[in-house]
Amino acid sequence: MKIAFVDLQRQNRRYRKAFSHVFNQTLKDSIFVEGKPVERFERQFADFCGKKYCVGLNSGTDAILFALLAYGISPGDEVITAPNSYFSPAMMISQIGAVPIFVDINPKSGNLDVSKIEKAITKNTKAIMPVHLCGQSADMDPIVKLAQKYRLSIIEDACQAHGARYKNKILPYTETGTFSFYPGKNLGSFGDAGAIVTDSKKIRDSALKLRNDGSTKKYIHTQFGYKSRLDTFQAAILSAKIPLLSQWNKNRRQAALLYNNLLSGIKQVKTPIEMPYVYHIYHLYMITCENRDGLQKYLESYGISTVIHYPIPIHLQKPYRKRGYKPGMYPVTEKRSKAILSLPMFPEITKKEIQFVYKTIASFYAV
Image (cartoon, rainbow, N blue to C red; front, side, top):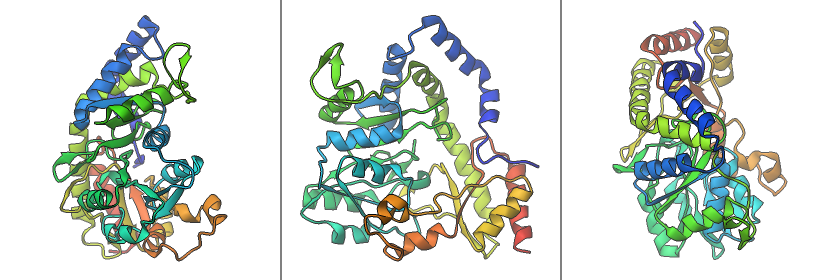
């Protein structure tokens, strides 16, 4: 049996008629940049997130960049974030000349350890950027209290958390969040795409200018900007998928529960912990395990595709090693990076497939 890590072909076959209609309508209209489909998606996704505004962009990375710029983060400013996510949050902080200040993670949740944030705050700290990793919200109330105490902005990286909740409130929990719609996400496009959602008109207006060469009216430029518009076709595809997202997230949760139940008897494997304050939507089903590399190779030999997210923590990547970061600075993150393995997870994965993954893991550990 071959099991893909994310089987997009299965989803596309199931909804081919609807997706083909979107493609044909886009071709018929021949409006490939901006247009009503983009506006429609922005309204839909803002409503889905419980926010006033959504600004569609060409990637989650640009969403992070534009949010930082919109909140006035400048060279020399410090932004607190975690060292165990994808490279983009720290990279965008550094790209604008600001400084990412890493805080180690909670070993249970894999998100920012809120008990360690206050010690990292200095006179130069301007924002906190929690990353809602794997589809599980960071513990936001303590972060909000610190932000209020020190007058800091909060920019939520929700690129893996489409529909996730904190204390029954859909993310982003605070004013502004950033999203990626990379094809493998819970809400995925057919290429690169992203968005900022916010309750702030000021942040919305800033992002609108930044995405279109510093302009909101053709040939009138009030600032320097970027070219980061959401393609019309991608917006239309995302609009077609939004009504399906809540059920897809429920399917992922059911798959995770089955994984948890089956793997609970293997002492060499620790299943992900769903914190009591969240509604986890399992963008990734990430275990920690003994002999991770051996297990990955063994699963691959049986046709089971897995991924290591992320084998090298951000602070140990070459650009940050050059800035003086060393092994041992964030021990929880570093220990976890050597043991994590993401198992196949997508809404259409079957009980039979999950059972096969379990049996193969049990065989490896001779359970």
